[in-house]
Length: 150
Length: 216
Image (cartoon, rainbow over all chains, first blue to last red; front, side, top):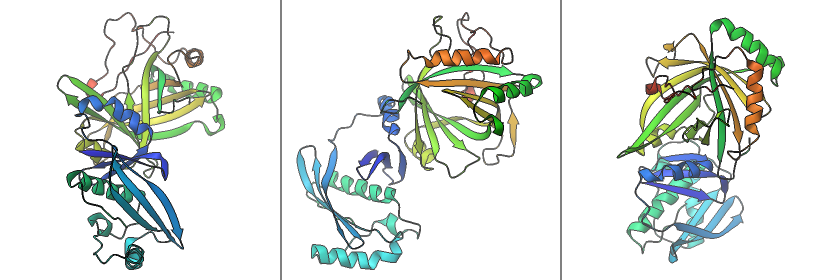
């Protein structure tokens, strides 16, 4: 129904992502409010998903390699490449995909998430979190899938 | 404001009402007592929507507070615990409060999560501060059309006075500060004695405002 995501890059924020990938960005006290309301929702059945890894910087790109673990089970690796100089997807998409393909030496096509191409509005941290939520949902359904996000 | 790392704190609250005849005198006294007196207190116009969620017999409410003066400011999601009254050793009501600043997708997300809006208010008035005490003197309006905020009707001609102080625990000196401050405001806000009543009076529960006052 909804995912709650925390990120070490935004330590004072909590992201609540719904099934329709709409994102609510709030302060950390949202967690306390949700704990007061948990009696109205069914308890969580699946273990937490964690992504841990390192960040590498190359020119204007920040590359994150994260190992995904669901409980104590490893599920794969997430690679995130961020262009720190650009704020709109349309401005940097082609260079970003070329850089990522060169980095991963991958010939498979890069899937574009629908919400990143919808408009020319500035890219927000909530877009990244929605994308992570999308990947986590895919992982929960098909455990053998490894996802790469851009 | 003292808060635990989780964002939860206790709030002491006193309510009263003041008639239009005494409103100017009350504001004059508040300007003298409070910080930022030269600016005369700052005005605010807020829209508050109350949402309710139910599961069987249990239900819970949260409030969404939006500033109409600063449309780009984050919206506030506030959860209040039960207001505890009836303790004669304590001069004010106390309740837990947790608030979180949120993005403007808040109302859509609450509706998606199963919350139903059950009341909407517009609050217009002034805010004063003195130490840890916050004083709001305001009028409540009900928008007759939620999309047209110019068509708002006041509930009554009286002004509502709300005194709040935050504390990190339910046994805190903040209540003394609140009580002492309220003493300075006498006799303008009317504070009917409700401790002796079995049920505190509810001022239009449909708008989800509980107006209760405690004698000092």
